[in-house]
Length: 112
Image (tube, rainbow, N blue to C red; front, side, top):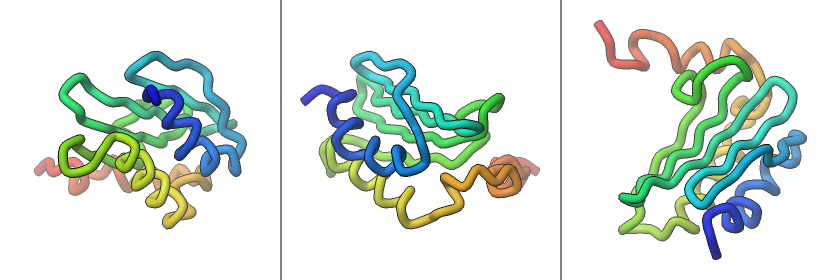
């Protein structure tokens, strides 16, 4: 299966519960939207996987993110794990800007 198909199989069902739909895709990335939230799933040529869920009008790094590296786990398993994390923490999909603001604090960014 290619990357977008794996997203449809393992992640989209979790996100569809909150109304997410795929708005663009290619062989290495899938972008999704639902109201005031955006989601982006990317796999790099080196096998780095990133899932970001963030408020509309902001950047992926300004929201919740899950990272993984193909090697110890397959890309399919990394997508499954990211979906599990989203299910485990309901605030990720609640759209609460205060929740996302926590990810932009100087402490979270490891800045002085």
